[in-house]
Every structure is written in C-alpha cells, then in structure tokens.
Length: 113
Image: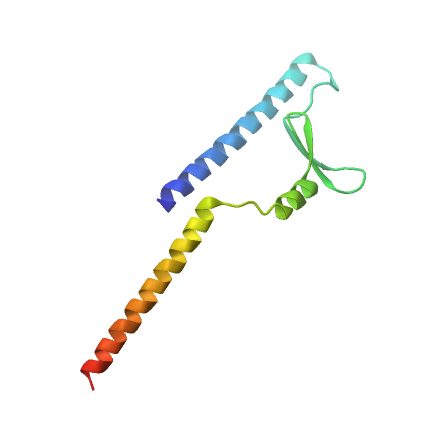
C-alpha cells in the first residue's frame, strides 16, 4: 500500500511539473512567434526575491509569499482524524504486544522454576 501511494505521489508530481513546464514552453513560443516582449504575458511559474528580501512565487500570474505561507501552515494546528486514528491504533497495538510478551515471559519463567 505504501509503495502504491509513493508511486501515485511521484507520478502526480511528475505530471504537475510537466504541465507547468509545458505552459512555460508555450509562453516562450508565443513570445517568439510575436517577435517582441509583451509585459502582459507572464511566465507560468517564477520564484524571485521581492524588495524586502523575502521569497515570492508566482504561479500563473498569482503571487504568493512563501515564507508567510510556511509560517501560516506552521501556526495552524489542524486536527487530522486519520493521524489521530493511527496514533491511537499504534498505542493500542503497542500495549497489546507488550502485555502479550510479559505474559509469555511469566509463563516461560514459571515453567523453568
């Protein structure tokens, strides 16, 4: 299951970057076909430093402040149901296995006394 999820993630990532690369190439083709630079035509994906030195990303003309978004994501402590479910299951399984091992150890100990 993990391998499948990893393959799907890698495939989606490759396809996403392929689409962005294709849009960039189409933009260059349009500029080349026109024969001059048009300031209204923007690149599909750009990363640059703004005046204050912060990283800014531009995707399809929409600018995003990367450090601000990263800080916002770090500040958000969203509840993830599946993460909590996994943690609960892991602690339950750990308790069961620990109890089983201690029970078997006591059984083996009582046999040899």
